[in-house]
Length: 552
Image (cartoon, rainbow, N blue to C red; front, side, top):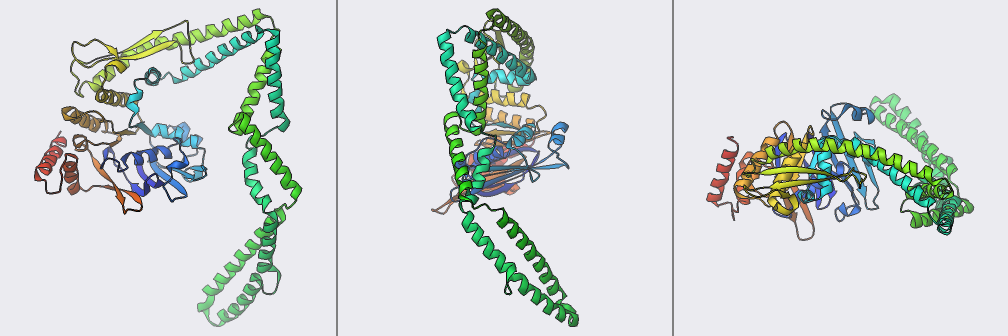
């Protein structure tokens, strides 16, 4: 579970820190107060994509830290990233130049490591994610996640790539000689352009680090020499003066023991200065002020820059393009192979792909029935009477794709007597929110922390009460963080956090704090529409809602 989240200079937040509890944690506040920003900051800490626009105005860098316990992290991941102890600290920073750093327990790691571990700890439901449920590819992915078919999907994707590559080889063999030669000439020209420069992975980053030092090598050498002289080389240098001072204080300390701490401090200072002298000397000796070296590296940097502009945007993309060129050249040069052999390769790879597609279809068909029943069970209590829900799995064997040959569609009927229709044709926004809540509950499995950012969109009245109760039930034995505008949902919370935007007319900031037991009812009353703290009717209603919610 999430033990603590600390956010610095993220969007409108200067600095907040909060400690959620187990159970249902709700976040409330006025519209635009920054409730979703805190959730976005947690997503950033767990490896989601980011940009320098996330940094608060006036700040140079943002930083987010998220502390979790390690109980639910799979053992292979703990071993992979050498995680020890029962706590794991995620730290991620980003500066104005777009340069970021990631750490696990203060040890540098790739951002991908944060995401890999993070997905075992937190399941996010974004503010508009329920709308994505209307997309067939999302429905297919959710079914495959439920059925644990993602590994089989990867094998299917690899088989599909082999088949399409075989088709490309066959197509190349069937090109006219003139077209083959035209494509071959173009690929050879482009490959030669890359190979003449022969870029190496990470070379551009190394140059970016070296060039500033070389550009200012002369000034750096002059400064290093002067610093070394001041510290070491003449009678008035720091080391010389310190040595004399030490001898005097040593003589004094022999007569007065109270000066021994002063003597120790001076001795340590002498050691530190000597170390600094050695480092400056090494730095000076390592500087290269040769203009020819600088010119060579600048020329190299410019060549790499042109390559990235043409084949990038990153140097890794350039190297990938070169490999693709080699593959294409090989296909074109070998196009004289007997077409029958290529045709056999296409047929063989197609057969393997079809076998994977058939296996996916059978497993999806069985899983669809089970998921539909579980989902129906989860969402029926959320204000649906006479609900019908099915998951259709139709196979188009003639047109396989990298995800198989199935089209999956969620069919939905919220009312008695209404025929089953695709979800995008029948479900309102509020109904979609409840379906997604049910799906997230089923699919979350053992993930210890679930986050719902305004899952109550489009609902109200009795349905909102039922959703609040459902969230409270889902939170038993795990941790749920929920951003909400509904008093009926907030009343079900085990912990209540209030987010408020504060401005002095010149700058804006956000505060986030846990409400005390005495503060919760007034906040619920505000959410009910109370215009002032003296609205006794709203306050009385809020207290009754809290009493009812926590008596169940």
